[in-house]
Image 1: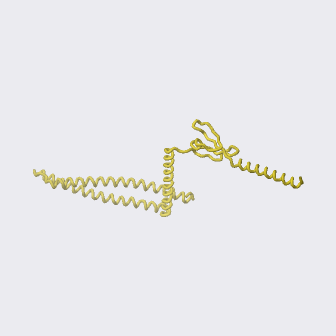
Image 2 (image 1 turned 30 degrees about the vertical axis):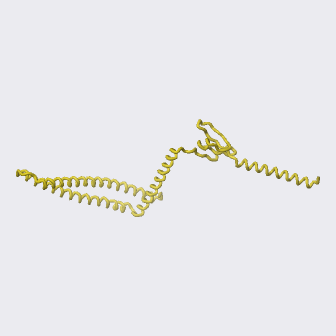
Image 3 (image 1 turned 90 degrees about the horizontal axis):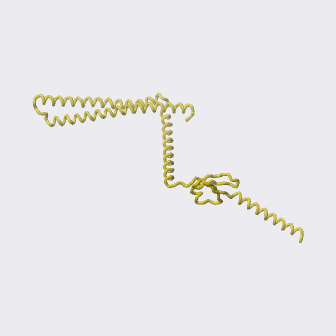
Length: 218
């Protein structure tokens, strides 16, 4: 057999062997194993995923036995519901934080310093004080009307005559008006107390945010 022909055969054999080794190496480099724990805590390995592995969660191992990825176990319908609810709460919290941050930045832009901000907040309390003043005037007038009606009814009784029904009705109506006005006054006073507290909190927050902004922390 000619030497040249023999050399060609030998080269072909070596080339085929090289391809086989290379293919085997690629196959090995792409092979993975899976590891998981069963319900009893026992470790299992397999070359393909099983229903138990998917159910309980599993680790993906490379050829060196190192974990390259962990897949969480399947959630039950109840767990999935709780997880979805948690995600919804987290999304709502993020939205709230973003909205508050936008409002803070808008506030800092609208009021260049604390004095201007404090004056704007005091204006809201002054408005409540004006409303309170008006309510007190109205209440005093209502109480005076009730006192006049009661005095008139007392004079009629002293004369030995019965109090007319229309006067009794007016007295009842006036009593209800006084009661309502007093309740309104109490509500407005409580609203003022809450407003004063709220303004103090806003001023403290403004001062904190302004300091952080000036220091470059916002």
